[in-house]
Length: 186
Image 1 (cartoon, helix red, strand yellow):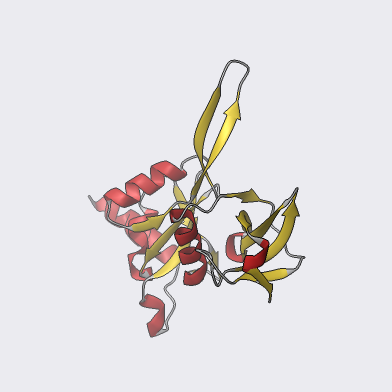
Image 2 (spheres, helix red, strand yellow):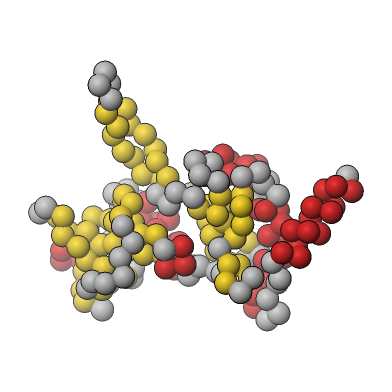
């Protein structure tokens, strides 16, 4: 029992809590996890009643003798958690959680609008897949549909339009298909 308390105390001392009063409101954070352990971590967070979000997409994989549809993680190595910073130890105690994405020793909050738009879009059937992280390109805003209000970079793939949504904090992007009429320049 004292080993667990020592672990908790050591973990808490690694990441200081910001001093502002608003920093203790529930926010979205990116938890960096061991490679290929994202689904396991999300399941354990759910068991511990920690609000989390693990975006996945469907992909068909082909082998010589068969084809199979798989649910793959959209942001490998990350699970998004919604919590007060004072409760971060509950996440860090989950096996395979390495750390929070942090700046200057403090976990960096993600934009609530980014996570909510991605969650709403996936829940409404928006087709998404990983995409290389982009910094340069034409920024657009989605006007209509489940992704309305979301900003991203417009790219063309064959005859379809896609918007690449980037989560700058973890330097990852995801491409979603949109109708050309649903976007406007920022």
